Length: 194
Ligand SMILES: Cc1cc2nc3c(=O)[nH]c(=O)nc-3n(C[C@H](O)[C@H](O)[C@H](O)COP(=O)(O)O)c2cc1C
Image (cartoon, rainbow, N blue to C red; front, side, top):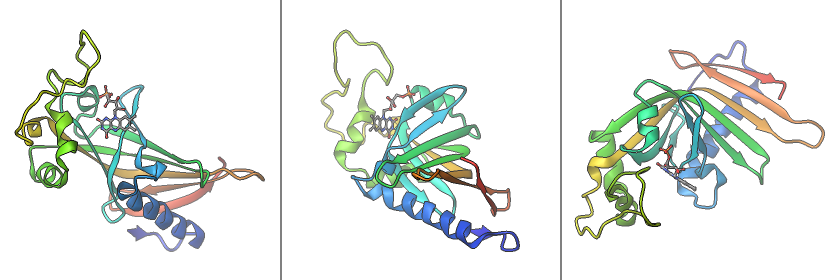
């Protein structure tokens, strides 16, 4: 992470690192509320997702979805996305904005697919795909023995974060900070009025 040291408040610098530490820890922590952010795409479309990975060095977060889902169409490559996280125990909200990259049947998708347990692969076999109408309640997952049958529907969304906003609820008055990374990865940061 490149930091603009001439203007950076050291508290802001450590706060940015702390934000990424929380994000990086969340994917492997089933009890973390940061593991299920709300991901917004397009004009006014949002839904809860599972945070699968976060990486401070590349400023990316990863989410899995079905390539046939509405969000896959809304998040065309290069489009803007926003993810919102809230941890009630810490009273901390993070809002992340960035550019989406879609990985379908490439090296990134293969690596994540290979690491998924069989039960995590099954939803991608649903027939027809997400959002299709059904006559009765059900997952649409057929009895298929090939665990990799759903791979053609597996999509990895990587969002490269260009702005991160941190907010902490405080009884004496909430506090907030904003972090922006430019095209070279240089960070500028400021406390903001929440
Ligand atoms: C706790 C929770 C976690 C979810 N995780 C995901 C996920 O990681 N990926 C996903 O595509 N949908 C996930 N969903 C379902 C989505 O919220 C949404 O209902 C579905 O993907 C259809 O969204 P779309 O029509 O906007 O594509 C999750 C829902 C909940 C409640």
